[in-house]
Length: 170
Length: 433
Image (cartoon, rainbow over all chains, first blue to last red; front, side, top):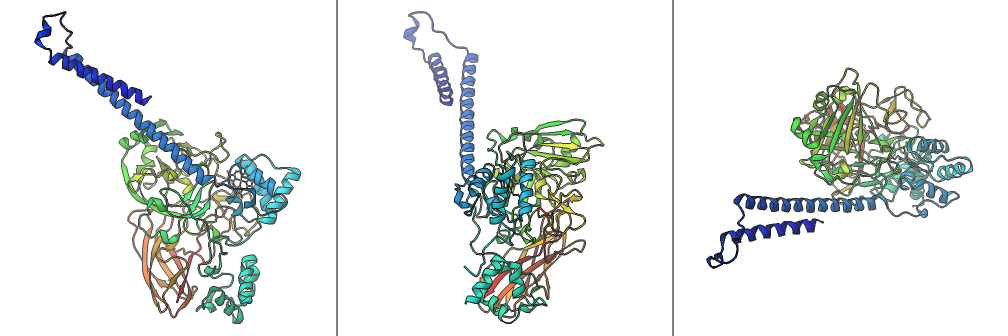
């Protein structure tokens, strides 16, 4: 649609120029024949020119808007790719309950937040309530809660300094 | 060889027991344990006799298998702590500049990153409402033309910076010491804008809102929405910031506008800012209350459970210094005896009075020179040099003292369930020869 308004601008500009040519360059021989051509007033000419300039400006602004919106979308897609790393279940340690944990715990965040954590069973259990009360997770109850919390407590117990590499060993 | 390996493995599996095995009663490594640890590190530990009990050599403190690196347009290779929400830490050695370049700013998101506001940034709107006589609804264009623009170097630090020093580990991103920045921010003073709205006597607290979506995608929830006492909002260094280092703020850091509340937890520097409400009572958005950004007044047993009801909100962040011209893990040529060191120190609302460095596990300290901050709430440059007695494994311990005489402790103090305000002194492991 920005193209068509650009075209409109161009047509407008061509018309205005045409009128200008007509006004300035009327061969004497034609004067005798037919009715006198309509000569646009200087004011009309100025208006036509202003209109066409405005149209060109609008077209340019629309083009820039579209360009910015497209680059914002492209940026959002690149960021989405960073924020949604491809993860499959086996990013979590094998064990009873892994499938359920992966399914229930990766709708909002990815597994990094789980893998970085190391808590006692009681703390994991508390965290399930926090996730429900503060973050809107569907409540985990009964056997399912037991399964999920047991898995987390077994595979992500408290550790110390779970980050960085030893700079002198490998 | 078997012995070295087993010690390392023990450290990875059961640090407490390994510590007890490796360290003698008086807290010194002895005999074969010392030999084993030296061998494990690939070096002798010249000051082993002075190593306090319960402190692992910095180089042993982390299991092998390095952290992931952020790969993102416009950002340096930061330490990637998590993808969704996106969280990344600046390695200390990337924080050497007086003014932190935008690509080196740490990233902490609580929700998603909103799509860039692609219209003219001057048309983005901010509302100021609540306990005011004249609620304002201002475009950024109006904000810039109505209020004085100021440019200041301001620290911005995550409330959880240094968290991975807590024992036992707490909830939250396991930051080292790199969740700190000192950008040159241009913006208007929040104070001027609040005054223009005519605050009522009841306007005693703020509440901040931004455009980032909650991770669940539920549009009725906010990713984070915190607030502060009005006195902090009225400080002349608390800004509604429009530019970072003279450029538009990068999208991931809050484009087109964010709060900068220097010296207090970074969560008060709301990104993608679109509303500030003034309140008679403390704000109650996500990130307020309970154990969120709150610490015990009466210290609790590390690892214990609490609802935080009698905790208090963190205000000014505690004193901290970083060594920025020598990376953790630097290997220096044999025979190196003199180290020229430098870095930055800061202390929330206070200033840094002194920085000391030890290369012998705290047995002796060398005082560094500390420069005045260029403006209030900027970090301060420190520099100086130390001498080493031999080749071998050393740790450079860096300790700042604030203007009220409080020093950084050896261990993260005042354990709290979500791991805030851990300002244990920085330890940088180096190997000479």
